[in-house]
Length: 381
Figure 1 (cartoon, one colour):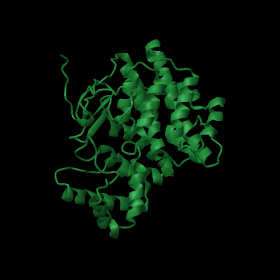
Figure 2 (figure 1 turned 120 degrees about the vertical axis):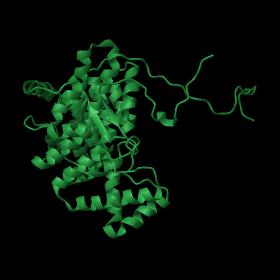
Figure 3 (figure 1 turned 90 degrees about the horizontal axis):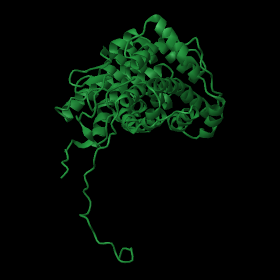
């Protein structure tokens, strides 16, 4: 008789794979990419340097980074066929449209199942998908605003190009660097829902595009990728310092979550949130002081109402503040997150493809005891 293993709901604390990509240590408030502290990478590196690290498992030399940028550059531009498709998706949000547009872009190569191609071809598919994603997203947003999409510029880095393609203006160095640090901090974060989705699909040895589109779908849920804008909406709803306590207690009494607080893994300060608080300070806006005041009171009230839960700000809280100050529209907060996480998804897909076994858990049936008799005529009485 087959023996089954009971696991916690949601696979909480269940290890399902080995990885060399990174790890999240929730009790310590620490996470890393390929043995490097992710916050230190955000402080010292460009996005492209960390992208190279995720792809090649080592930080680049200066010549290697120049070669990498040259390899990526042609993949950033939309094909004529994709340009014709995007206006047809005008009614979609950028993230919803990405599911269709990225699928079409990957099919146009065309991408082959990872089973049928070697590691170099898989890596090239990944570079293409990661490079074209920000161009698709900014084009989708501009089309939705009645504006013409903009081509990427070869003289701008990843974050600066993203902001330029979205707004039509070359961003200040401070704004570009602030968004770049946010993007670096969100490239990867353990086996979250979208990363796990990508690896499940990759375990079937489907093509890389299929796995990425599945990950985008998982990210679209508000409990995963939709919190930055919701956290700012909460600041708007509070309005001013005098309303903080009443608003927070009202939300908790109604059984609603305070968006931007609490994390499935961290039981202490989220290191991403701590660093982004400092980044926000450097951008200098009235919203920063208000956000810090709200943070302090939410943490105090949560400790009072839910003792022992250890609930602190997560990355979404100050991510929203940083992006707001850098000029990113709120409807583009989660799409912006996607432009970084696609690099982490791709690294996980490539790792899964190297030594894959199909991920195939079981479900426990809890319905009416079988077998029930089927009526003679097939109809219920």
